[in-house]
Image (cartoon, rainbow, N blue to C red; front, side, top):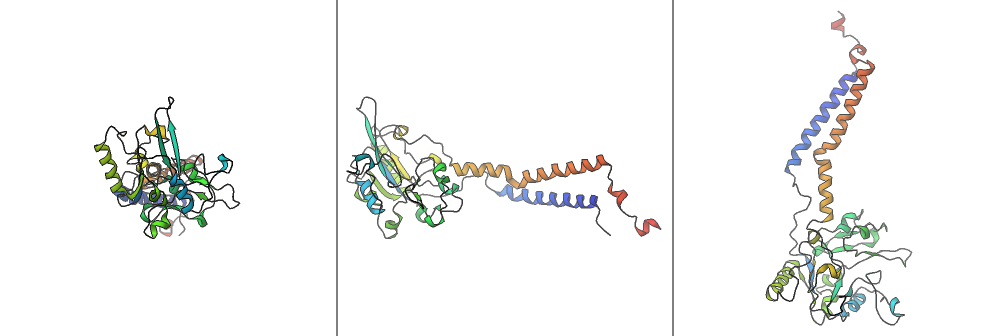
Length: 308
């Protein structure tokens, strides 16, 4: 005997209900937050103390040499290395903030922050940018398709595209991963004459930053930038002026990828939304059938028992 349309609808409804019930159970077991639980204390990182920086820019020269980058001399008529910002030739830059009176100033070092939950990696559709060994956000050029979503996603405006090349790639600090792999430290931290920037594990650097804040509270803004911002970063900052004046925005504690995951979980949790859409569709179909008077029972042939 063939299956009637009413029977088919009942079977589909029953199957959908079973799927929904099965999906609800694991959803209860999932963490409600979109932020993955990560212990980043062992990740590699840097601590930059703006109050110790003298603006010598030795770190910039060392960075270019270590990464085999041509120095950006465009703003100095090809005379010396003087980039205006991070760009395809510059993974690390020292900038200077000076107030209106000119009496108060501070240097600031800018490079990739190596976020614990990096938005650039979340935006990269095929994993060219990813968090790899030592927690470093590294770049695999052979996977990159040049979409530049990472540039738009980064809250610190760090990744730069190599526009001068026909096969351009993304340029950003990778914490001198090749040097770290052979037991060295990043080039910028190695050459800094005042130890304004130091290399180490994030947990140790964070403890050192808080020690400095406690010992010399008059010297610093009472905050370690990067401890919590955007879920935490592996490059941490101390400064004597407000961080937003140095181009470090006052972000909240939640990383953008975590917020996105939270939204997605809300929409798709337990397949509730797809099931609801299916239920609405099934209801419309059932109502249309009732309206048209298409009763499946009348369509079904009588069984032999009923005929007898």
